[in-house]
Image 1 (cartoon, each protein chain N blue to C red):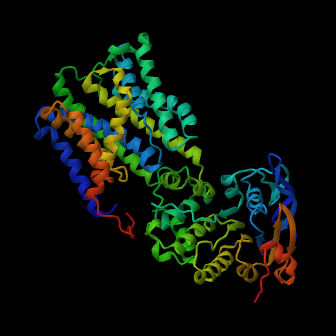
Image 2: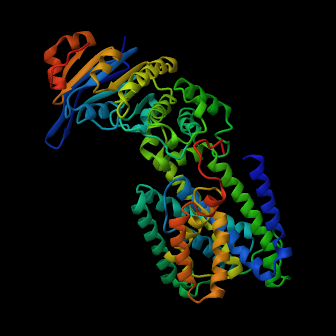
Length: 254
Length: 320
């Protein structure tokens, strides 16, 4: 099976500092890959390179057979990769419906249509409702985003990324800022949404090791800009040495 | 739009149509600039209220429209108002595209300062290029023909409060309707995402720079149409039209009416002109009084007049 997304010998330097050193990785269909590592390990740089935001100093990033090194967010969304950020990103004054419709407009390439009413367009509105329902936001379509609860804002943020119908989605700490009790709920919603939306692979940057253990199918660990480990969760959590390097302390895993 | 707002709109349009029959000529001539500004301001608000870019140099495009009409009618002898407006629109497009290409790379105060700078550049151009622009004395505007009708048999007031009034109102309705469609279209949706969160917008596939430019150019075109209408009753295009205080008035009117509302800028234009007219007759310190109004507005009524009239924000907007 050929990989969906591939980083080939990727390095990224900032001046004399190298944030990423010769990382090669492949991501395949049906994977949920957690990217872990201590602060300063190069996680952010790596995902920025993987999503075409940063051009690597050396190496290539191939997504579905084409290079996406440094293509930028708009092209990325057209190629079929979506990304959601650690801090909730919403459009405060737009409704839930308008927010999701914005993504559907891009996906259906209707953005130059300046004459039709976007909220009267059945194709746009139906698709938006479909996505909203997956995220349990269907009853709040006319709510202004700024009035939603924190958890709902997070869901809306991710829902709008899903509405692009991407093949691969990268989620940067999807549960940050969410109370511990709600984290599982969000993750469960996300996993089932990904299945429903036909997303082929999911990349997660996550600090919460319990969530990583529970939801990922593979763990990629970075440290000091280098690839430290690329293992299934079972093997990863079997190695106390690895965990000590990543988390900085021993974790007794349930 | 639901039934009730539509009814209010129809009543208001009807009321505007009746203005020449019920108000004295003087007040009718006051409505003329309000209509002209109304067109310019809904364009300005596409950029400000919908795209989130506050231009301090929008008077440039009003002046551009005004000078186009002045040059066309009195220098080139082209008196068809439709051709004049078409020329003004094309002119503003040609000027706004390069300026916009540069300006939309910046946001907030940097965008504001750049647009201000271009506005002032144009102002000094009008001053210095005497041959073309008539310098500080400006250029006279010859009364244009409307829909091919030579109306020179009417005296000036009859022309203004009769055919020209309805002509202006007609254009306001047309351009207002086009803008209404645009802000509710997919294009308008993407502009609003850019206003609220450009970074997130990019990740949803919104072409942020390109759409800012589109918004910039459309707003310039509306400005030029407004300027073309504004200059006919005055009869003179002069450099003051491009001066930065005029750009300031445009911002003021929009805030006065309420930039969060589609009709806010039009309401603002009418309110501003009415207010200024009343204040000028009341006191020689009318500028001071206008300043006080602006201060009170920002503190007490940030949503403008329309913010006060429309119901308070509720979580469920019921699809307005």
